[in-house]
Image (tube, rainbow, N blue to C red; front, side, top):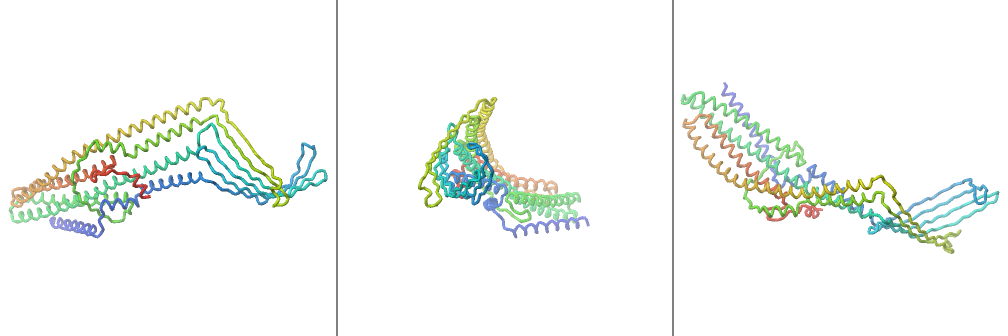
Length: 497
């Protein structure tokens, strides 16, 4: 009865494995390239980084548009007032009633080079004005037009328009770099998780082989016990080996499903969607020149450009900081003509020129050391930005060296792992024959089976580790040593846009 339950349990596990196999065959297996394409469209982190890039791009477009000519029209269709006022010149009260309508059309052109602005302004209106002084009415109805050209120019200060444009350009470039880096990091993350799923599938296949071998061993020893050719203790050990193999399959099934869920989350897929992966884990060790990898990384790594942008932004911030409580001035010049008449066609019969000149200065006197302290603080920020740039260069070289050493070590490990699998397979085949002939116990053949499984897993993991480290080196050096060509993510990004 006990062995019957064991067979029933084995049958259930077999059905489970068959069901999973059918499900895997029913769903389309994806390659690593297809997984990366899916993530490009669905990965939440990548989408957020891309949207952030689009936001800064639109900010740059808006800022550049603000530097073009601006057209505006202000209308005051109706304005009416009736007031009682006192005339200081004549020391008498009078009543004033006004009804007017006017509109102002303005064209303004910012000047990026000087941070000034030149404007053409035209104000056209009509008014009905009536004043009553000591019972005497004075009334005027007339059209008027004021046309003038105005120039405003700040002096003795920094160019705020140019600085703002430069700052937004840096933000956009930084966002583009961040997006490119996120694409590389996503590729790294997906590759790790993709191969984790692949390893989980491989481990499940190995466990299935172990289960089948354990079942065959159990049948062999059961027949021997029933024929009184082996002791019952051998059957107990075979039973334990079979139960252990069944448990291992169930655990590997759980591990596979968990690995798939993590991959689906990174790809931006629904967790209820079924996926399967396929990959050819064939490695042709690549000879990597360490000096070339380091030089490529130092010349191309986008993080260095980000640190340079930080230094440039710190310089802009220093200019702005030095502008606190500064001596500055504003110059305003305008020239034009004003005409008025009761008839519209005669507005400019007797025009009047209206030149205007205005100069103003802001003179700081005492700020209790605020500006000096802020300038010192900003100098410290600039020093920090330079240190981070230097440290980034050291980190890049350090990481490339470490990955290069791991690659060299993994090349040796691949050869060793391949030989270990071959030897473990031969050892298992020899001892399986001895086990069938009764020269080995069930515990001993189980140990050889476990050894073979572990060697297979180690070999597959070593190949995957090599491919992942080769990808890490490509990301760190921005050079594809398999294809022997440099990687320029930012240029590729601009081409895609």
